[in-house]
Image 1: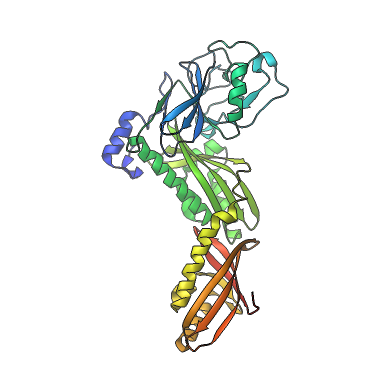
Image 2 (image 1 turned 135 degrees about the vertical axis):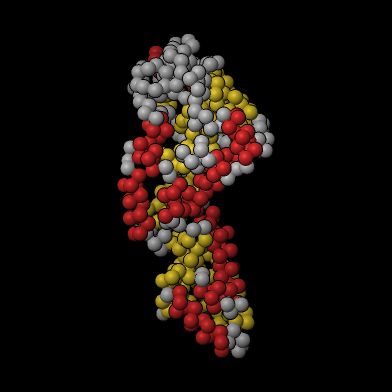
Length: 431
């Protein structure tokens, strides 16, 4: 790592990280995974220690606690899996893909199996091969180190653990697993916080259709890991960004885990644009480049109903309400420049078109008369094909004493983490 200062961390923190092996690759004798009790650690995960032939379900309840623990069996050959058929169990951070409960050989698999996402993007980047790494049971008692690379537990254990092995559950496979109830001031927490912030910035750049998003990737590594040219990926995103007037992304629960010489962040995400609405779990795989900057080398997307679509309006309403109130204050203060800044460049206000025309119209009006009273009540937020529709009761009186009351309707389009008014209409009908 040539320039660790680019991580934005202090020299003493980086020295501690380097000393602790946070930036080192897996050693020949196997990778030791440290599962720390940090805010970004997932609430639950499965950890498999190959050295002790043990599988544990861990829960982060400050401190980290073992909810279930079972004897397990892993690959017949020690070390990290590198090639198909090498009889080794891979080492790293993986995720449950689905459940298989039919068509399996009972003696070998016990009738139930949970495939993992091996090889993940970093495995592919490193040239690892093979597939079919599962957590499964057996129709006969297990013996240590007796699988072809999978992780197997007894029948009664799979019945208890199985309900927790839902798609997306994190699974740490390592030579040794160390659970550590570390306080927040430990060195590792700085990297976890950094990756959490980088993940937030990545979401914001994507939603903002910002070219800055591309700088967050390692193009060469991404092309290998995704088996897709980064240039093609960038060109496709540029076409989409140019085509769409807006993109809105809502996300929650950013998790961070460290693998052998890489990190993975993942979160529930709801994506909305004029041409597509989807939700699921997004994973970003990060590695330090030659200059010491953490960059994305791979991505995964798990389409899944995570409940964000159902709660979308509830989630955005506080922000929309705040935006409306800030807009109202600029209006009430007769600040034409600040007021016009709330409109999209091509936004409309009745017959007026364009932000500059809206500003000029208000400047002309407010030279003659200014707002004296402006109340907005009964705000409603609704989905609209052009973004978000907001209507409300408006009661207005100007400095000459003229007043009116009616319904104001706004169409808002997302703008980063805020909004812009793309259309405004007014009706004097009584609400």
